[in-house]
Length: 476
Image (cartoon, rainbow, N blue to C red; front, side, top):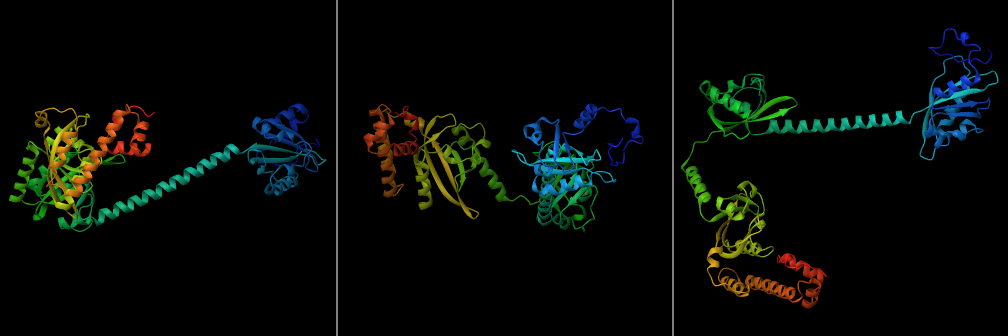
């Protein structure tokens, strides 16, 4: 057969003559079309004479309309040289090889991997192509995954370096102990100095060796309890070789599948009379009938006794710790700011009448006394809060709040400066006028703003500042 392909392949048939005359043109065309996603019949000038496209997506990209065009005119600029080289090498005796070229398309370049074969003496050839977009997308995902892993690895190395720096430079003696074997995994320099040993002397040694034999059972029992609970009080033991008593705490954590114990050691301090007094004072504050609360300079609660928790309606003391005191104390934007201003100016305030808003929405009339105290490099505020609502309810009831509010203002004489009293009086008058305007306009904000001679936005701001947003029901 003169039309038998002239290319050689490593896995070619050993006896191709057996197929001589066995393949009809229709069978040969069907086979070529099914080998790849696209097959091109090229003449001696590399002009496309026929196209078979088995990939429907390539049909929509216009690949089936190439008949009559030069093959190199259907590829991108950088692929023209590849096309020419493949067509020129298609008749060589060496094995043909696959090469990738790119075709321009409306949705972007389409990569196709081609194998070109000469099929006749007249120089015609067949180019079989496979769509490489799926492989390219997979390679892109693989590259992105590899880059993500590299970034995670770098972050892990950075975290490990920071951990190692903190572990080695920390002044607190720390050991990392295997929870299963009770052997020391790591020990920082501070612990080595406390125990009086050299670096590496306790590596993979039983952790019980750091404690005096008389206290080892107590120490091991504490480690066992730490494996089951996170809330354990420190245990005091004597270190081995007469290095003195220490307080030891242990906490379980996991690294991978291994359970480890973080063991911290503190120099044990003998109890003093001052400690006893402080403990007694804490008990008194906790059980005193009036509410007590200690806040930092940002007015976040540091300490609160049971009376304050009960007055605020919180379910537990943990729910109020760290929360702003303004969540419960005083009218929004008014009372608490005045109280803090007086504390900063005079150092203390006494029996300031205000309200306390409970978690359930209820309000209680209270009297607040407070003091400013130093705290480290900053300052803190201590407040005692007395519920006077029951006492106020015994007074004759009045129809409006105005007489009681004026009485409260006069009671501030001697506790605040005249400037602060005048400022509070102005806020009171403004609040009363807004309330009257809302009543007069049947809770219509727009009409109330017009009557008061202020803009609607200004009225909204004043309503929010005075806590009157719930008094209105319409914005028309």
